[in-house]
Every structure is written in C-alpha cells, then in structure tokens.
Amino acid sequence: MMRILFGIGCFAKFVHGATGGGWQRFDTGKISRFLMERRRGSAWTSRFVALYKPFLIVRILASLSLAVGFLSPLSAVLVATGLAFEMIFIPRFLTFFMLLLSLLLACAGNLGGFLSVDWDETGSENSWAQSMIILLAVDLYVNTAWLKLRSPQFRSGRVISQWMTTAQEIRPLLAGWNFYYPGFVKEALCHPDGSPKPLAGYAAKSTIAIEFLIPIALLYSPTMPLAFAAGIVCHFFFMLMLPRHLVTYSICTVSTYFAFAVS
Image 1 (cartoon, rainbow, N blue to C red):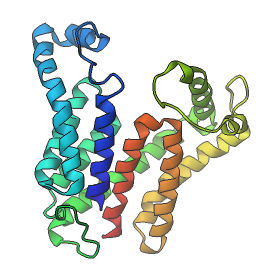
Image 2 (spheres, rainbow, N blue to C red):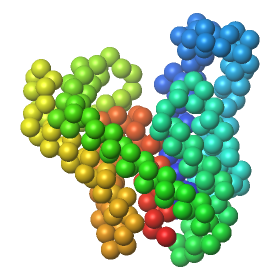
Image 3 (cartoon, one colour):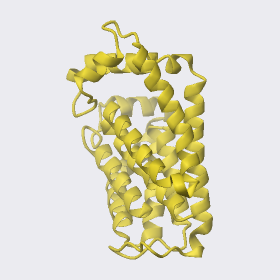
Image 4 (tube, helix red, strand yellow):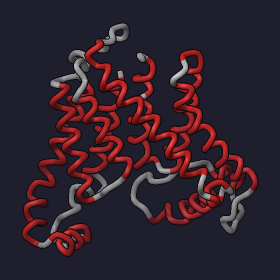
C-alpha cells in the first residue's frame, strides 16, 4: 500500500511540476534559464535544457508505473532519478526526503504485483528497506518538531499568523490554487496587522507536540490507529496552508505509515 500512495504522491508532484509554467521553465528568455546560465555557463545549461522536458515526461510515466506496480524496482529508480534531476534547479528538503524514500523502495525485495495489493503478506525480504523507511519517517518528524521548538517565532504563533496574513494578501496575484483556508481561521488566529492572537500560539505548540508524538505512537501497536488518524488530520491542515506544494509531500509522508503497520 505504501508503494501505491507514494507513487500517487510523486505522480501528483510531477504533473504539478510540468504544468502551471513548469514546462516552459527553461525556455529562452525565462528567468530560470538566465540564472542557470549565470551559475553554470551556457554550454552546461544547453545540455541540461535538452534533457529537461524528456525528464519531465519520463518521471511522470515512472511514478504512474510505480503506483500501479508495473516494473516497480525500475520505476522507483526512475522516480529517484527524476527527483534528483529536480534537485539540480530546485533543491528542497522535502524533495530530498522523497528521493530517499524512492531509493529505499527500489531496494525492497517485494513491492507487490501489477494492479494488486497484498494486504496480508509481508515478505521478510523487505525488512531492511522497511526499517530504513521507519527511521527516515521518525527522523523527519522529530527533526521538524525540534526545529519548530527551537524557534521563538514559531512557538509564539507569529510564523503562522504572518504566513496567513501574507498569503491572504498575495493570493489574488498568484496563478492557481496556491493557498486556501476559511476566512474565519485567519480571524481566529491573526490580528489585522498580522500579529498572532493567543490561539495561534496554542496551535503552534500543538503542532510541535503532535509531530513529536506521531512517530512514537506509530511505533506502539495499541496507539497506531490514533497516530494514523492524527497524522492524516495534521497533514490535511498543512495542505490547506500550501496545497499546490504540500499535498504531494503529505501523501508521501502518510504513505510511510504503512511501513510501521507491518513492522
């Protein structure tokens, strides 16, 4: 099941990366091409641009193939290659997280059959990859929570309130569904000047606590269903903050829960 969800998450990410201007990102006259030429030189950029659009197509097909279970190990390698290719021009920690997951899936001994889900079968040949996925997921949650805990701006709710205020202002200027949350949420969390209300601080501290507790609860069988539910709800609210970018990361992160479920 993890393979299916992860493949769907990557498919959504790759389709998003090829639309909304992504296909034309390195066309002549685009700022992305200008910046790459300045950093890497014209010759290197020309070779990169020649591979750019074919790579966009290949990685979309590879993620779809991974989701349906067709040539899964090869598909996982191609997905990892597509993510590594993206890291060249958009280096993000979340993309690197997905890259590591795809490499670990490529190392699994049994990723299931074509268009099938083996609910009751867990091969011992997957144990190493499964253990590494669990460690990676725990590391992601604990480190994310730790960074937020160390930030006075986040703990106070200021990061949330200023993010929401800024997003509300620039949303009409952006193409696509970049931000969404009900208006009453902003009113409950933010003053008109963007400063946080007390509820924003409580929301921030609750987020830190939930991110610390989710991996612990996933590792303990009696609390695993609660952790599943809490994680899905938590990532749903993350997606409301930045849906076009965080929906794919959220799907891929939730997919790791199934590694805990069969441990």
